[in-house]
Length: 624
Image 1: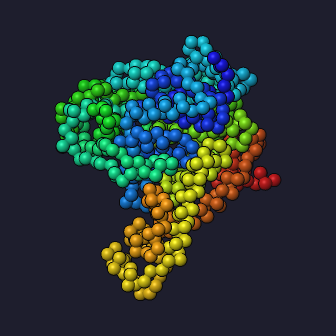
Image 2: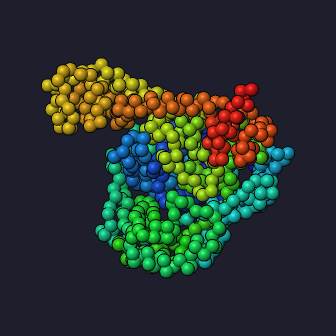
Image 3: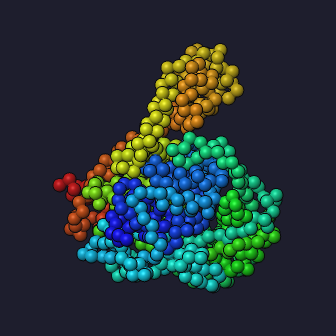
């Protein structure tokens, strides 16, 4: 066996799978090292992909040639477009998946990928020579050498699980922790911290009184994640169910707090503020009498359900006692309890925007190792690390997405510029340019970029071009078509919008907020043949055209703001600048700039502790 590769990826979670796949697609001889080949891209927490802002990230991964969206489409048991009552900048796709099938599909995909080999063993040491990474060593003493190594170890680095006062080493229930790498990198000068996350009990659906809960069905309209699919029909769509905690359940939980590892100081790592455990909720929101819970099905061929909203590290007795007080769960039987897990992470300010470490050449970090939480955030980082590792190996320019180009750009810039003090989760509110960064136009924003660097196929590129040619054709049709009062006023009256008194361009009617373009088109002569060649995807085409028409003013204004800010992003800062010599900059500013070493004025301006006056002085210095 040949033990020499171009790229080695350590860790087979969502980040590792995306990194290994894209590196191999780009022509690099790639090795994926994982402790368990049967758990590739395992859904360790809830069995779902997407959601608010996270759905946008999955669409962006897909537009760049990643696989998360395609695997989701092959395994989803429910699909919903969230926030449809709000503007399109807030629409977010979300899918429940068959958790076991999801992992099997990822393995099948990776095993069919040319240039990619999978090795099952634990990597416990890096091979470092003269400030560069040269490969990895494993627990059995094997050595694999490569030009670049991407670490995607997730929650496994010195992982420690908690249920009450009982602890067990491990990176996930049933899986051992990963040892050695944290200590080695700490000795090499890296800043290593501890974070905490948690998961909920899994329950047997046969013991749940679903009739006492609120059923939440999917949209059932054939929508899907990947831009490569026009429509995905779920033959046996599964529902989620909603219930709520109550006073009685809270009393049981409060009684169990004396055995809580979280509130007795046994857990040292900081947990996610936006996804707290149920015991954290009842303490933080003491006056709130109930909290919403979602029962999410784990797959087609299992009775297992995940209780979203009930993450806990309390004792088994407390978890069961509280669940039995909740409507619909009075007789519930659990498969396994919820637990908390502490793990090592590396402060991401130690990274470049390429996700390569500043301290060791050729070493990349991606996923929860960077302090993030969520499959989607991990997958995005893995994709970008894999792309940049290959580009550097080939002598190409770094591939970096700006904040106005992608949620992925926002994610990585936040991490490397601001760092984290709790697990980072993506929200739409983190993005300044939400109207530009919609889930529907991720292909328009990114597919061309992926094609230029070799991650996107010719088929995907042509598909994207055809879609937007039809969007533009539809816009042009509406601009040249007219409607008459006698033909359209009844339609306008039914929708509560003002009638017209003379002929008017159809696009002016389409711009009205009360009008649905899909409903308007049949009222416009000539529209019946417009979309006949792409009947399956006409919903996406109509929606894209409608967003352009209705939000054109907002889009132009936001693009103008982004272009102004881009000028600051384009003002690069030399790598060898000595901030200590710039005595006019505040002491805190010099310290922060020296530690993070921003690549541009735009990045420097987003560093906490660097003032506007500090930036002005830095700009004057660069101009001189």
